Image (cartoon, rainbow, N blue to C red):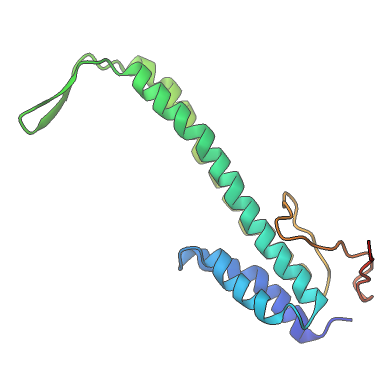
Amino acid sequence: METSNEKSTGALLHLSVFTQYFIPFGNFILPAIIWGARKSNSKFVDHHGKQALNFQLSILLYSLLLALIAIPIFIFTLFKNIPSRMYFNEDNFQLENFNLENITGIVFVAIMAVFLFCVLKMAEFFLVIYASIKAANGEYYKLPLTINFISTTEPNHTANQEPQIQAE
């Protein structure tokens, strides 16, 4: 049975990722500090710390993959549809024969990239809150879509039992 301190720390680990909106990389820094300070005291806190960090690393990877797909397509579509008659005239940039009919690919890629990024961030927001509620209730929870960058042991028990780590 987890103590109320462990439950609070587990919930705080998940909620601390929201510092990303105030501190650059706060979603990695604060959970890593809390997890590093408390992981040796409790398997419950260790589990939730790893889950919080793994989830944030996974979200970062998914965002980077989205950018790696969207940005080259955007650049290719932009340069494909811009004529080569661009030049600087004194202090002004001039572009001749620009055709807006060929811009639909750019608009579509931009809208899809923004839409997928918004879906990813909304999913992150709600899943972090859900994981913190599970931690506050003393339950072991594995966030969906999480890649295990930091190895975790799967809990093989109910919320009222101690975790049993199996030797390999």
